[in-house]
Length: 453
Image 1 (cartoon, rainbow, N blue to C red):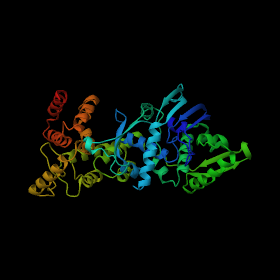
Image 2 (spheres, one colour):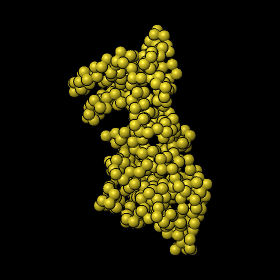
Image 3 (cartoon, rainbow, N blue to C red):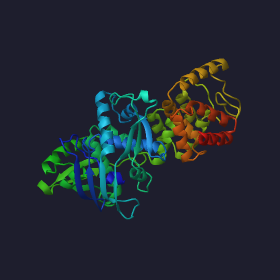
Image 4 (cartoon, rainbow, N blue to C red):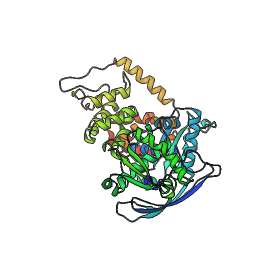
């Protein structure tokens, strides 16, 4: 809510040469705020930077709000999450966007941590750090930012804290990304937020702004009424066509002109909340595509999802080979309502057992399964240390997150990335310990080895 109410990213689609700062005082949801934006040589955040920031905050929630406030992803993966093609132009846009989000400082008066609490002044950047993840020094990609770029992106601590505060509201990112233009996406986010945070809006049945004040909230630098009005006309058409707005009416003339918005009723259960986003992240860790994971979370209650997810994780972690792929197998388990799958006993190591009446026959012969397993293991072991860690981090997190504290987890990551531990071998050993019911001994030994190195 703080990030949305402060409206930190400009709706401008392009900046003039040398345009790097803005400063506005305004009233939003009945409270006074003042924001000073200090950009860098790439300008201040604007246009598509809004999409980038929202995708990164959603990714942070999907990953369970990591204690170090960082998420790992590829530049290619980020473009796919943003719904963009992997063209050289889009990689350049993404690079510049991350540079602005990490290099722009905001000074904000009116930041509110708790509903009804005392507002305070904060200073921060959206992103604390953007790093390119590399293995051996010789593998450092000296070429331009592109498909092979792997990133570790760390959110500023104020931004991360705001995502776990009481003033968090589910936001319909999927709907926003389907809107045709960055300006319509920006206005959607602002109106969607204010309809929720302004107590008068639901009672009045509309949101109304002075035209110039709305221009400030959209962080436009040209606040002439005719310029603001021209920009809004196209945006209004897009939001009405998408059925977000029922109507957008301009009232009065000149500098005293006002804009009145009437919103169509929105499905309150459609945006995913923080708990649901974390479940999406865990389902995706089973190699299930993002679209399927989100659809599954929307169709089921949280307790049902947690139960099915625990079962799928338990079975998949004990399965060495997959005939149709790991994600397809996990998806079948999540959607089964016949009782075909039950948690396997400790000695099970291949396919999941069936219901009480018997077991499902292994889909591959023992010899074929062993050959396939050895082939996959050799391929995994040949990956650079960093790639092994990125590939197996989610699975290791599921197995070890309740067993070791955040300090040991950070130490484990450092050892794996440095090549002192093999993430592939570690995951196999952890799965074996779970099957043999010796996980506590495995964890104790792991802690001892971490401190010895």
